[in-house]
Length: 561
Image 1 (cartoon, rainbow, N blue to C red):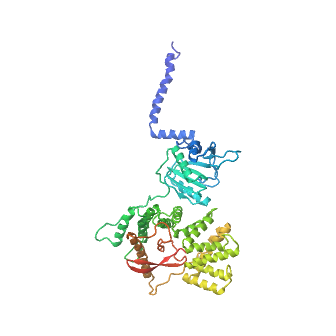
Image 2 (cartoon, rainbow, N blue to C red):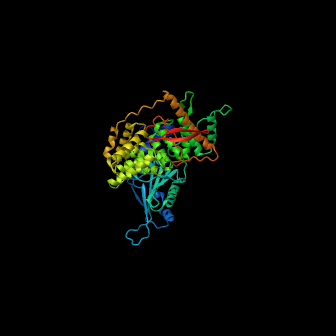
Image 3 (cartoon, helix red, strand yellow):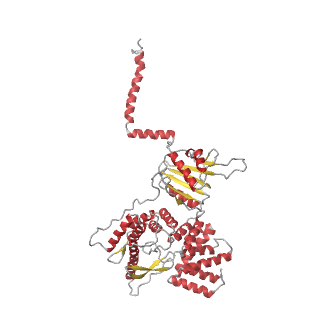
């Protein structure tokens, strides 16, 4: 049978099939093009939403009831999913989580009398589509600004982990591959139980262990190149080579000593010091990664001032925290000051805590901060208690040579606060303060105004913007040497300062060397006056006796206060 168009019905029906075949062949060729596949993939994402990652299990799916019961040794109720609120895994407070990001486990049975001790904990999880190397730092910041806890690093769990809280109120944070964050607690089940629960959760993700690197690294910091070894190598180059051999073997003391050598620099033919901050930063980073508190402190200063490394306030603060946690006393007052400037709900208490630790560690500046806090009534009690406590703290600071404390003692005697009014004693202490500060009373008064304003702001936050009203009084002109050649005097001081660092570095190579590494106030207090942004007039001039290859000299060491 022929159709009206002169073709058979079967042929007419097959014509469209031929067109489809051609389209299929054409489409398959197009699909081979990478750009086409990419565009189609974007289209599917747009239509279907963000693709589900393999690890995107809900919190309740990460940990089974049976596994939790086996670890805790109790019978639990069915786990209950929930949407977290104000979680420390979020980068902002008062943030709502999503349903399923949290899961509650408890052995408590409603309306059942005489139950044994209840075991309960919560598990939270967050996922990121791309790795975030700052996830650990972000979580630590939330702990730091919203709680009174101090994070403690924990090895062997995920890519990174830390825990906070008291033994009966532990919270565990675990991070994996930059994309997964877990939090267990706070709970009373203990750290060991929380670690076991976290391990089960990670196993369900297939990521029980990971080597992903979080936080700052040595990237961009290049290892210093040593001068060629030969018969004409200078003594300084020989010293660097000997220390480098120990530093390469992981000796944190040698690494810190090398950092100080490069930072202190070498003397040029004109008597001026040539600093090498970039090479110093490399060795400070190595020592800091090995837990050396002084190295973390020194590297913090370099990042703060942008010396040898890009200025980075956040990394500087983290390193300062690390140094203080390692019990390196000189870092504690600076950390206290940093917290005092933050104005978070917990920063005032943290500032006082670190000032107290500094004072207990023997730093006069810690006692000075406590003196102002007592004098402003920030630490409780009635007015007589404020002033007597302030006098005690100021006197301890003054005993350490603190000029500002001397002036404040005079002020308390003048006003009769905490002690009977005594004009003679007041004038005597004020004269000591002026002499201590080299006669620069204006600078002292400026510093006192800053401390008083900071202490008052703790009681009245509305005063914070008024800090800018405190004028910057110019420093007194530097004294001129008796022969009229002040640059010559500076060159001598530079030479002595460099010699001090070299002497400490040499001691590292001795068989029985004992410079303190990590924490403790016995670590050497190096001269910071060579740093461009350091204020050498900010308080007292200490003195330290240093050995220069058997020659004993006295050099000025400018303290923080």
